[in-house]
Length: 302
Image: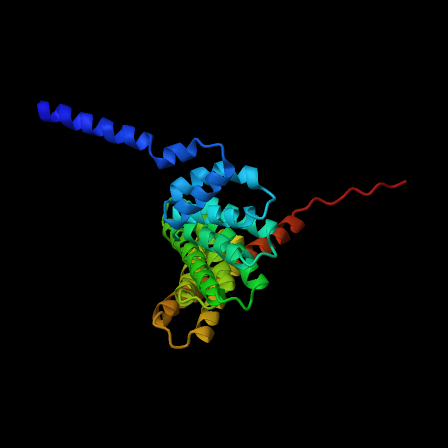
């Protein structure tokens, strides 16, 4: 019990001492020069949270002066160093707009892009913020194509594009799984559209061969589950996708599977052609019977 009381007293003493320490006294100061010097001191020492508090107090006072430029940059960098990337990006962006002729302008624009890049989520999450990072990187490389940070910025851009591609592939895979659910027709159609869009958006992707094979599979399934009057067109689409696959991937490991679906589609098309012929003949017969049994029109004699 005695030891516990001593520990509590020691903690109270430490807290009391801290409350009356140099930073606490400086924080209460109204001397902007003292605050400015203290903010830069803590910044240089890596005490970024303390520096932010002091910069918050002094920046409104020195706005427009020659001291504001460096203080604004350091303030933005404090947020970056403490991993507040969204806030940092905003402050770096504001710095660039305010001091676009500054020697620090190039670095600020890069740091804006870099902050957004670090905040960008993994591929399985929404990529809206990643799109913002891409826009910021593109702005930087356009403004400063000769920058020492150009290659680094392009590497960031390639990485983000890879996340978009992976996100799109994951969506394609989701639609592919859902085609086996309660409403396959909707997801067959979604797969067909999604797979084709993926190939257009990412023509060099390693996933295109796999999705091209799956396109033949789902288009065949879609045709088989179609109504009578839409079946022929969709079966021909499936056969066309198979032909396109052979041209693009002549040595593919998926060729055997594509052959199977193509043969299935062709067989289904032959059967459907017979049904269409029978349907056309029955329709013609019914029409002929209707004409034969049509009552003669009465002719009026004046």
